Image (cartoon, rainbow, N blue to C red; front, side, top):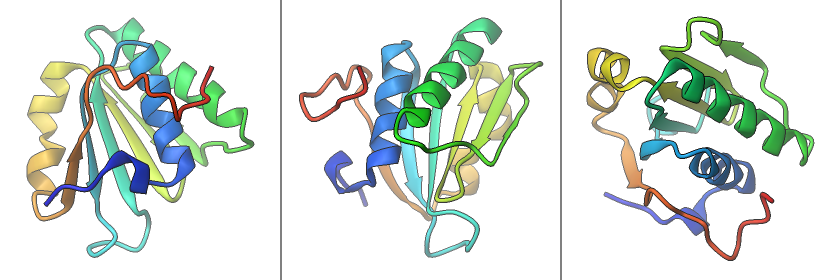
Length: 129
């Protein structure tokens, strides 16, 4: 089952927009509310290098900081094969492609409601700039 981007909370939409602005790829959002109590959504995307993964994470953090939303924790930033950003209501996973394939979060959470996001989501309802 798929849902649409407008149905998501503003901070999740803003994180997607920020990642898109830094050329993140292979977006997917998984609604995990029916399975876990620690978060509502996983935002999963990829960057093609460790530096790009870091740049995506930095841009998401800066964009969300503008609306006074800060991560409770950020893991994996230094090694940058997989950066996890915990915003409580949603968790951002930014992977290098080979790390993403190895951990296969999409497969682990296959029962969740999925939303695939277009690569270039520069929509008029975003104010991330």
